[in-house]
Length: 179
Image 1 (spheres, rainbow, N blue to C red):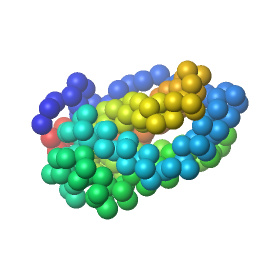
Image 2 (cartoon, one colour):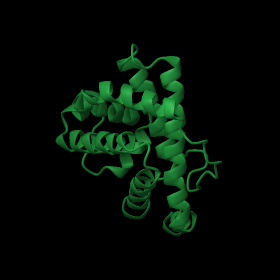
Image 3 (cartoon, helix red, strand yellow):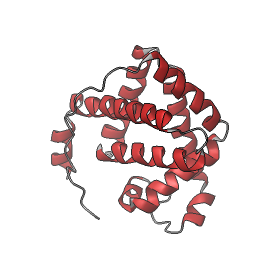
Image 4 (cartoon, rainbow, N blue to C red):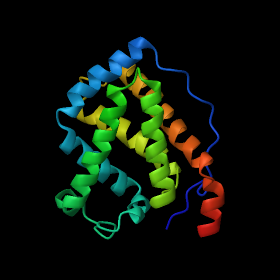
């Protein structure tokens, strides 16, 4: 397994500045276009993640041994997980003006991935980069520089929220105890 810088540790980041009203509108408008193709986009995101960062597959017993992207694409389990990822993003984007709801969703995602699935937090940062890359390639007419900037800020906010939860559940102690 390739070792990633900072593995086992949670980045201690500064909280990103809150989204502006304009950024929320930009995110919701661009997401509405993306979400129309949520199944295909979700699968493209996960396949890109697994191809470019093969160590990320270790957390998925159902398809961690599938090597070829074509086979991954056919996996019902991968498609189901892709839909869950896209639905979670959709919930977050739909509720951008409700900071309590966003915080609640991020806390739930963080706790589940830290305690139940034992996913290293760095993978959320990696996933954010993959999401931005795939959206830019699949929707070049939608993801302008201004839209990409808003998504970058949102993904940083999501990563901050999830890693904060990792801190709250004692991730650094958990990962050294189980590693």
